Amino acid sequence: MHGWKMIAVLLLCSLLLSQTHGVSLSLPQPRAPRQRRMTPFWRGVSLRPIGASCRDNSECITMLCRKNRCLLTTASA
Image (cartoon, rainbow, N blue to C red):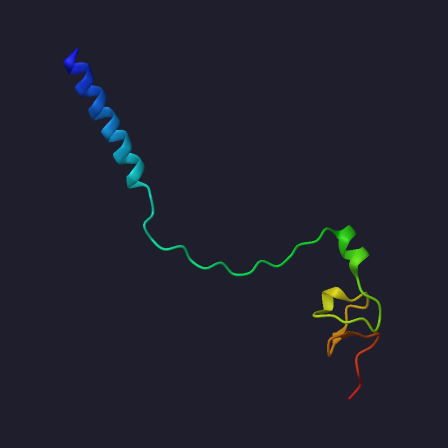
């Protein structure tokens, strides 16, 4: 009976050691901010009209965002 207890303890110790062996001790890397993803439906619903404020071309219905406004055409030089 004493032999089975020793085998069980050794087996348990080896199991715990194998679990700690796979643990990473490195510091987590900071994550880059994720871009939001939208389904085609929500992209179509959320497109902004001409003259509305915008941050990039994908927000405007005309796909032209200049000086933070949705424009109909690009300015000619």
